[in-house]
Image (cartoon, rainbow, N blue to C red; front, side, top):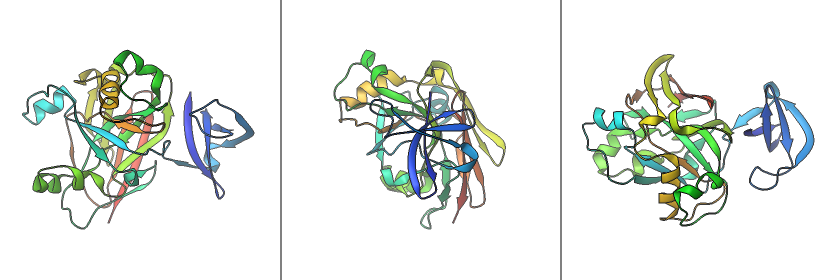
Length: 251
């Protein structure tokens, strides 16, 4: 099932995507699903980021090929950090190149959207507490990351977390193709089987650090091939079964 958030007229609504039509829901996706008795053609609405997280928990250095690319040891436990909810934009949104940075990078990532309020769960409980999966881009001011010696400023600018275009609730994430394309040229290509820490482990691990709420987003790390973008560029994240997340870069 594909869940979307969308803007129609002056309203924001949630729905289920079926082909080229959206069945509008009465409420959101996190409780009992109830339709609102309305449907909309996808071409007549604006798709928004499919979740509105209270926090975004990101995982660094979580692909074996990326660790090798960076010549870094495989971590013994997940390296986690936070991105603010104000960094979220949806499909088709514009990534704003901050004036204080001279190197802004793309990072294609698998996103995990939390379904329930959870604390301290075991890995085998993770699946029942995941609403679904989406494409994400962990945009990073790489020069500021190196300058600061920590990641908060580099990861936190407004528009630095594109998400979408939908949340897929039924997906086996163990071996999916994940790619990024800059101006139509492939820059990253790997598979989620390269993840050092799989999704179920990550959800459990993070829930033992902080309470996760419905709609919270975990982005699970990026594979090899990260690189820089400049104003005027187009960046696309593609994940098997999750469609395509396209955004543009501007000053």
